Length: 284
Ligand code: CAA
Ligand code: NAD
Image (cartoon, rainbow, N blue to C red):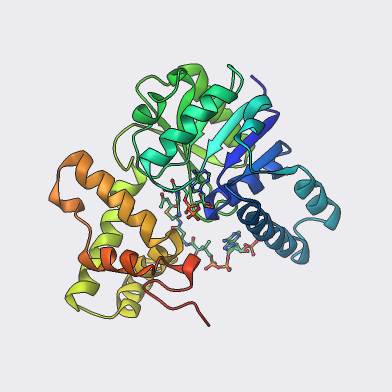
């Protein structure tokens, strides 16, 4: 199957990035969110990213215009009716994703692949909410999507080889490197990454050191581009808490239990960069 039209569900930091890369690939791209304000906010971020590329001489103004011209804003899931690939990137919550997938299954043409950018939720369970589990797959992009090379491709129990091959090819066309794994809670990436971030939050909770010190240890000592606290704020503390809870419940192993401080930050609405405050303050 040749992909010509893609729909991205969710215009947050991940969905917006995926839509940008999809349009850059040359695909007609529908950018959906629950209201036009959120869709426009996502497209505004895209515009800013592309303008930065123009000012750095990495693309021309005309190329930027052509990319944005391939984006169609949408607040109706019915727009999936003529799409070949739908990539969902909404909140990390199974019940909300379930509703969206069963709707998409009703609307999208029978050949369409339904992919989820979930960080941790079982692809097999998401697939079971549709009548096409063979065409449901995980396409786990990394943040920030336009920069990071990886797509972790998660094969659910029923995902067909054909679906996997189409998605592998699509990821390469998007300029990414697909790496597959089986469907386990947290996949490969977040089983490793979130345990590190959670441990940093436990250290913070115990008062071992301030966040700056924890980050400096990992940046200067381990050559990480960002420390775990800054990375947590980039990802979103709500998303991290959801991922840890999925792994905690999924494996029944206390090593995944979220730090109480993480829970408290989420309760306070301190979700990281997206709310202007998380472990660090971004209000200035
Ligand atoms: N969107 C688009 N482009 C961005 C960007 C964004 N949000 N942030 C940075 N960039 C671009 C910059 O424009 C710059 O581009 P050029 O090379 O063309 O000039 C490039 O990225 C480097 O940016 P900066 O020089 O401003 O800053 P930096 O060198 O510190 O890099 C970073 C920023 C790429 C974010 C880097 O700090 C990094 O790699 N951090 C770690 C990110 C990471 O670990 N991501 C994975 C998160 S986990 C995940 O995604 C999975 C999950 O399920 C939670
Ligand atoms: P975000 O909070 O930035 O954006 C989520 C978007 O989903 C919002 O714009 C919201 O309006 C929209 N949304 C909520 N309910 C919706 C619904 N019913 N229908 C359509 N849209 C709805 O979140 P994000 O960081 O972009 O994360 C999105 C997904 O990507 C999650 O599954 C997350 O686990 C995954 N993910 C996140 C990261 C990360 O670093 N943040 C990395 C990889 C994967």
